[in-house]
Image (tube, rainbow, N blue to C red; front, side):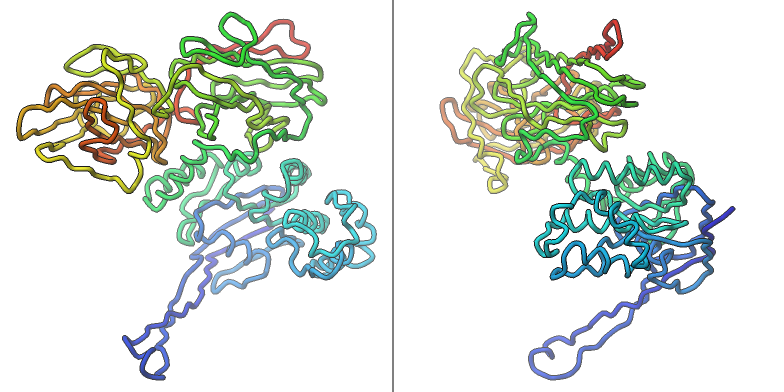
Length: 578
């Protein structure tokens, strides 16, 4: 039985555009000309929702999602089309609408409830439940102006979910409060789903859409362009984002979010605590506890935990960061293909062992976590709480030590060991203010990226060979210079530098089975005189390229690793080797 039925629903807004006659706003009092523009936020929306179904609506900002929910809730009327809804509609669209700062939390509960058409006698019955859910007992009789924004949202959510409904509309409300309260909200919505409540949800958090919804509608420019199974609609949405280059800024923000951690959160221990991490230690390849390692060593991180309540479909995660917050690598057991059905109550442990040969000397931190299925909330999450160090010198501040070779010349070189002393290249060379330093008689004719068989290419996969072909032109004899090629992430982090004596006009730098992970990268090229710190020639972003990985690994560089764990009531450890 259908509880929502939309037929050819369209919504038009009339926008005003001013055309100012040149100069008249300064010299005359003539009125500005106004042009009225028809803007169609929705066009011909057909939708049918059966009782007990959870429907997701996804799309880019401005696609029409919120307009559609406002029409379903009765806040807006459609311009054309027919709509039928059987039952009482409640909405979590604007939490805390009508709150008054001068009134107390208690008084605002009654005020907001009246706006939501809850009678005073009904709210009296639900008052204790609202207060307990909000967890604001100690602030109940303080003025609302003393509440933080998170506290206001918690109060608004707690009131709204106590409204009786047949259809619930939810618009981007899953960032309410701290991580524990978010999980509480999510569990409430999931409980409604299990009770067979009809819900329509919009959110940019695709994991929630995939987890909760039975059918998903994808909106683009006010029209439905895909509907059906959540994975099908989500896949089309992601393809649409990739297809339209309007997503460039979002892609950059996504890459940076996977490349950095906010250091302000380091040292925090978050989570719903059904699982508690009780001990973490780092060991070397000999199994001895250690905090300092060399690049030829391995790092084993062992995490002990206790399960207070049985959990289902969890996964383990460990992420390594450089001391300044740069995200190096963050695998988890789910992304690595292992499914843990459940963990019973009791004590357990998991470990991961990394090979460190790709990381440059320096100071590092790491986070450990036990996550829920979709990594929406953590059972326990220790954010950047633990430290280790890779011993050695790193004068140039590069993030990685990669294996490379030059053609023609020298064979495979590891860790930048040269017969001649490596030049001390200043870090400021990658700044935007020095995009080009020309040198008389020297021209970089081309900097090309090639695949293994020599074809030009700018899109590579992790573990694929990358060739960088450089061609110089000299007006005289080849000077006595060092050549440097620097690999940078799209956010200007210096990943790696390759060096050689400049003795031929054409040469190819080869990274075999490059371990770089998904993201945008670029390379810069410079020439240095021996024992001179400033370059004689420099070209910023001489070439750009992308790296893609079919898996879900986060960070900058893939580190070979293996997992092992022992779960409560399990006699032998499970393991997976990557």
